[in-house]
Amino acid sequence: MSTTAKPNHIGRKISRIRELRDMKQEALALALGTNQQAISIMENSETIEEEKLIEVAKALGVSVEAIKNFSEEGVINYFNTFNEAVTSSNFGHNNTCNFNPLDKVVELYERLVQAEKDKVAYLEKLMNK
Image (cartoon, rainbow, N blue to C red):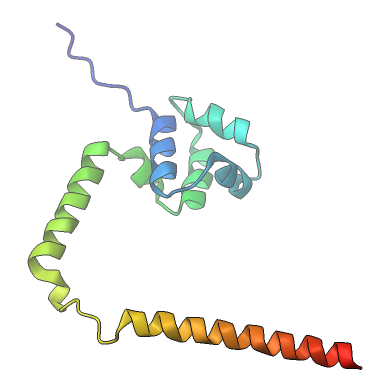
């Protein structure tokens, strides 16, 4: 039985971090001054030059170490811990609204209606000239 470790596929890690940051390949390509095809090739590469990795990390808003040490298990553990902390402590806040959300919707609607009335009045004024 083989005990070889799973390869440290940097390209896949970059791809997952990019996806978690809700970033498309095109956006990363734009940030790096390249094209989407180059990003696709990079994400399929097992290794990446250190200089390129530094640029990618900066574009993704993470450290090079975060890319190198990225693991799915770590992300899951982080979010599970985060959610447990929110549930248990609630950050010391009582999450109740101190305003009626429906009132805010009505207020917004009234402002939109007034803006439309102002436009109509302005257009009528222009037409009467």
